Length: 241
Image (cartoon, rainbow, N blue to C red; front, side, top):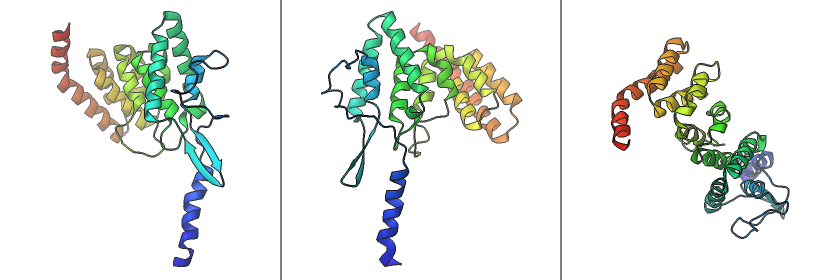
């Protein structure tokens, strides 16, 4: 058995790598800080989004997955937000491109984390892009993790919460839908985090109408937390108004 152990380990390590479907680019790009600011076709937005994708490099029979560093990702996000702030027209163009990016299947792929998805939803959240609410809410159960690193890691959820009351209607429809329990409970906690009478009423309705015991317990937990925290949130809102 020990003689075959190295061979067995190589099968368990190499074979999964060969079967991976990471997001890939068709050509090698320089990192954003060294690359030209504008792509060859003049579309800087697409160029920046392209930098978020991982590249699979096969060199001398070795497989290496290369992707943007944390600093690169932050720089790309800063630049996208900067472009959106230039004008209303530019903002609309950036947001539309980001929403279209979320519609691409490859945006959800990756080695450990779906880097394109995670960064795009973060930018949409920071821009408070209400145009993206339906897309974000319908994917609120997708955390971007290919391997569960943290149960609390969900940039999609946080982006929805940043939309505030504008997201309540879509979240209500999600939590009352027949979608999987995972997505509906994330929607419930988003309603809890946003707070307010409308969010509370949506959760109360969801708790009454839910038939799955586990899901109902989660919905009730979200509702209880909202009711308990709402007086403090109200004081905070009054203090800042």
